[in-house]
Length: 235
Image (cartoon, rainbow, N blue to C red; front, side, top):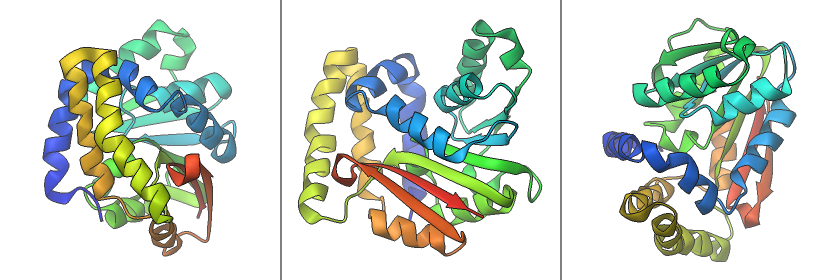
């Protein structure tokens, strides 16, 4: 499960929508994106942790973590150099001491360039759905976590209930495009690519089962009838 041969197309779209990414993401998530990120962070992170922000993008998860915990250090990992650059600029404009707690690394989930047992936590904020191969990504997250470390995934969910699943599908295929267009014009229409990633997502119960193949304790927090999920997995 994962994007596989579609991954390159999604990365190209993400590069194109960089100028409007944050603005549109806030609109199409119905204002829930930040709320879900904060829940995931509070459930999975403690002060003093070394955290890998996997698929960090503009650094929304990283900035929230740095604000909440004064002694956390964050490594931002993303395959798109332009996003890492903009994230770095954004952090530089904030507290100067935050910049000293952040490192930037270009890479993908399936081949994380760190030793076994490096991190206290790995977080994925609306990025896990873009994995090339989800099981390989989970394997790497598990490998770079310390014993007792936590994986936090915040993302779109695919409900097990067929009616809820249909509702999410219709929203992502039709309504999302309208909202994105009003938020960002023609460039916003490219956010329709999210529907392509959603089609390849496992159902929430299947994703839980995948995580339980490696992690000893996995918990699901579900909102919007399973359309928005937080997964907390402990090694």
